[in-house]
Amino acid sequence: MLSKPVGIVEWSINYLRSEGLGIDEGTREVIRTAHELGFQAVILGGQANLRPGDDRRNAEFLSYAEKLGLCIGLSFWFESLYQSALKKGPNPFFELAKQCNLKVIGTVLNHFSIRFDKKWNRNDAVASIQTAVKKLKAVSSVAEEYGIGLAFENHIDYTCDELDEILSAVPSPFIGLRFDTANQVLLGEDPVMMCRRFRTRVLDTHLKDCYLVPDSQGAQLVWCAPGDGIVDVKGMMEMLEEEKRAIPTTLETFAESAFTIPFKTEAFWQYLGFGQPARRQAEEYLHGLTDAKNRKPDFPDRKAWRQYERELLSKGGKYLMNWFG
Image 1 (cartoon, rainbow, N blue to C red):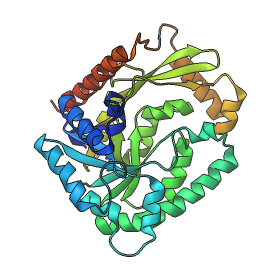
Image 2: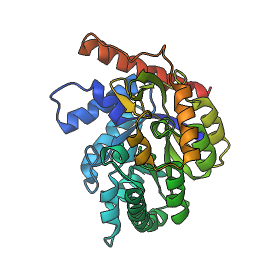
Image 3: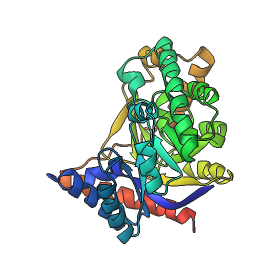
């Protein structure tokens, strides 16, 4: 089931940071902002803020967050987790997670939208899957030892079928998905179908919504608060609520970005490697979501943009809080 505390990811708040702050003061500002927006937890990129092995520094940040009534969650680069899993002795990443009283930590197997940035074909995807499986198996033994799950995000890298290959090859209950409720739209796949397919392997969440704006190449995807877009966030939350384990409830959304889904181009489909039936289904799905009435937000200046961003995060947080009544 979805569980409290309701959290927000650091990188959503980063756009509200004051300029010129160092890492330490910037981290404190992120924690303060999460508190001001009404959240109960904030997920930090551990290596930039809380540092594995630096117990004294970490304790200071944890104490600061605790005084504001916030819990701390963690997300680490996957390669760092893998390299640490190859070494003997206490694992600094999982030790830090234990210090934060976490049951799950997050990661990404690849950088955002690598599939299109690197112009993958199916062979590239297969090679990446094989590497991911090998590394996840190494990390899974550490996760099992600590009793702390590792959740990797659907990060515009793998299709649902490919995610199934990875999860089937690494069946450990301590390895699962950090399910993002909107990312898969960028691959022409329905997040609701994805949730139904993988909900038993969801260990963590990034809850957000989106809408599509017509574009000459297909559409532009714009993130928005849950409930304001075309994704059935409520339906997916209801599905996850049926699971018997606790699943963190976390908001991730941004106002500043729009991402092109060039589904009118052949290159888009070549990178995905869909067969004809799957392609036809994905094309119909994306065409059906694209609405000529939709517009990208337009900001006259940075101040207006920051105000919109703050309102977006506050609205998303209230949506998730209201879930718990």
